[in-house]
Amino acid sequence: MTEFEKVPKLKQSSTHLVKHVIARGLVLVYIFVMGFLKDRKSQVLILLGILPSIVLVFSGTTFPGFYVAALFFTNTIQTLYIALLLPLFGLLLGTAALTEEIESHTIIQLVTRPIRRIEIILWRFIATVFASLIVAMVSISIFFVVVGLGVPGDASPHEYWGIHLIIGGWVLSLICSSVYCAIFSLLGVALEKPLFWGVVITLYEQLLGVLFSVFGGGLFSLSGHIFFVGENLLPYTYNIPDWPVEGSIMLLFTLSLLSIVISIITFQEKDLS
Amino acid sequence: MVVIELKDISKSYDEIVALSRFNMRVKTGSITGFVGPNGAGKSTTLRIITGLARTDEGTARLFGIDPYDNPRVKARFGFVSEHDDLYTWASVEESVKLLSRLSRPLKRGITSDVDMAISSVGMSKFKERLVSQLSKGMRQRVKIAAALVHNPELLILDEPMGGLDPLGRRTIMNLLKQLNREEGVTVLVSSHVLEELENYVDRVTLIHRGQTLAEGNPDKIRSFIYTYPHEIIYRARKPAMAKINSQVVKHEDLLRSLSLHIIDDDILECRIVTQNPERFYDELVRISVEENSPILSVDTQSESVEKLFEFLVS
Image 1 (cartoon, one colour):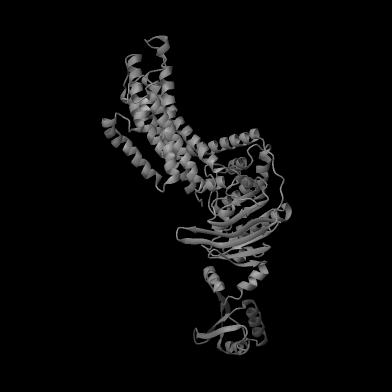
Image 2: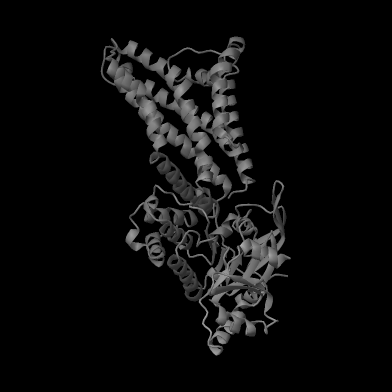
């Protein structure tokens, strides 16, 4: 029988454990977000995010009054940011989330420290959503100002700042980022070529999702469900016939949760080198 | 006391068997060299010890605990991998500090630990420099600092001398020796070159094709390795060669084969194969002096480490 060195067992209260997990998590988020911000990819994403604002400024477009500006802002958030840019951010950030750590071998530094693999996945997911949200919030805020909102206009005091629009845009970005980052993170953990499959899913969203929506009215489209939830946040109209908004909320939540759980299970058993 | 114990561990990647019922024990306070050719299973073993990979069969215990399912045990060791696994966007100081925070998130006074770790590897002057701007040798030192910063009881290094010049290798091995002697840190260091380690380690484990080939102190391993037939080539002028070889052939116990080649009108080359090169060199020098017959050059045909291990297995 082997005699190992006897070490006194450390007594750790649950509060101490939670403090440890949170403190370590914040370090992980810092590492992930700083890595993202110092990477060229972040600059490309920020540029993509503010591109609509740049186009608007250079085209010299102006909007006569608050309501026209608010309508343009809402439509752009729905058709450009939620339907295209945020899925793209999710695709690039989510698929790269763990793949980059594995390819650059930095994952070794994490896994050989006293960190549970579940923590790495969860904090990485939070950091990815956070990074995507930073880009979305900065882009949407710039766009908000460029469109001419956020300044006194001719509407009622409640509306002319349009604060509810920008907050709605941010919240919708958070939902959208969370769902896409969860799904694409799963691809990053589980598949050999995550970016390829990510593009396949995005194409499905853009092509087949539209096709199916003819029959199902957005029921088979992920962005359809996000639009439907977003209808309560921004003043636009989107409807999935015979389907409650609670159903869409549950579906998005379940899909994201399931993706994260499968990512954790997959990563738990993954050999790293 | 034992810090690492691997019992009958097996590991395969698809069709390739990396480890086959491999056993290993590392005692507290020792410096153990883990030697084998490329693809022998060294990195796989270290991956299992550090919890990066699971075993297919057998048990791996670190301080008596399975490292894969109990990450808390990882606070007790530091690992230096064979890869460049540092965050290149960070400075030396930030890198070591962040990685230290992951090991001890609530520890106070971490800055002094970071300074000490950086200083111990001689990188204090470069602590503001970005990791991406460092040479291979410097990055290797930063990796060691990051592995030491939380004062581990055990240090595991996978091919730490890879890509380093001889001075860099000696510096790292001296550092490990010093850590072992002064701080009592147990060290497990892998390499595919025994000569790099033999002057610094207490024990050596030879691994080949996922199995233990030999275990013991460096002298025992060295004598084991010297059963491998070495080819020695020496040149001399014709009259000198005749005198030398008339004596050399008397040492039948040392010779496995001898062949003579004409280099030019005046010079001959002799190629001999021996299993005891050290004794043969001694004898050759003695004969040359006694017979007053100068040798023009002596060379050895260095075989690849893979061939050496193939021979030892056979």
